[in-house]
Length: 154
Image 1: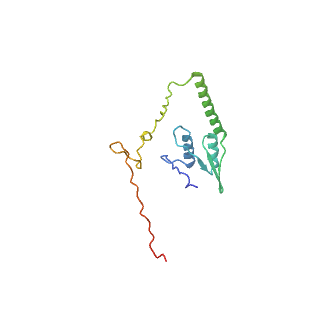
Image 2 (image 1 turned 180 degrees about the vertical axis):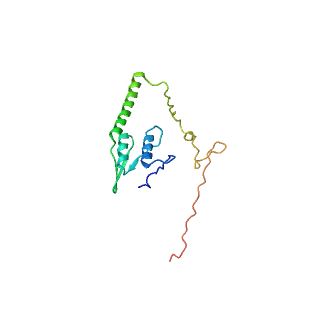
Image 3 (image 1 turned 90 degrees about the vertical axis):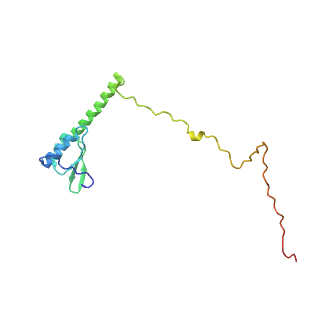
């Protein structure tokens, strides 16, 4: 299983215990613009502390199975806060109008006609061409030679 996921090594100097390091990485993953982690462990104490902490997906490893746990109460509370913040922003836009600092999105202009499709059509090669005098040039007609049968007519 460890080959499917990236293994993170302890960045602490001097090295901390595994429990402290995991909890520290989980806390840091909640900060904006930090790397997010899914934590898999068999240690029930670490799982309990992370459930209270919230905001980190947990995998518990028991015998031959790996279980993805349901979000804890703390995690659900955080997601409710995010939903409320989004709703407050919507109401603020409705009341105050558009934000003057918001960038105006430039739309692409409608593209014109393909210039290659607008070229004049070329003259066909098989058409009858006129002489310099303006008269039509007559085509030569090929005459068939008379067919004679040779042989014995007995």
